[in-house]
Image 1 (cartoon, rainbow, N blue to C red):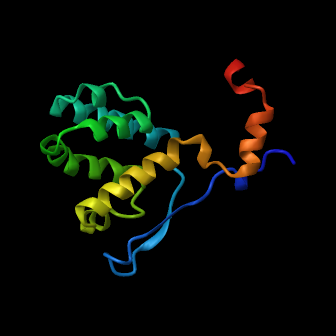
Image 2: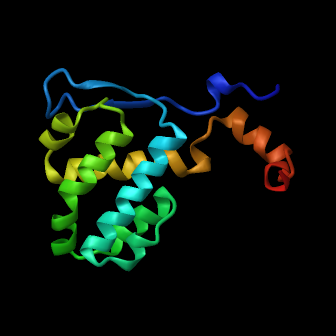
Length: 142
């Protein structure tokens, strides 16, 4: 079977209903512009907080790695700004207010999950992974 764009990735479904009443849905697939704004925002946040690894992050996995090594004090200072950047990336579904209602650890788990989903090629559906495996790196030659 060839490439099926409609089944290439899993939908970005979320369910906050354990903490936010009737709050579940699907995050719209982020546009290239939304991703660029997110990475610009995280670099700016990193600059303001003095987290060198965050300042230079150019992918969600690098952002996640930088956050994983940051101290708790730095994370507290970054959290509010990071949540705003994540809400923008989600295009309002869920809203900033809904994300802010989550307990801290749940909110951090949501952010980690989202960053993983948008950057991890192993999250592709099996048919998409098979298509990539058979491409012999053609995308890298474009």
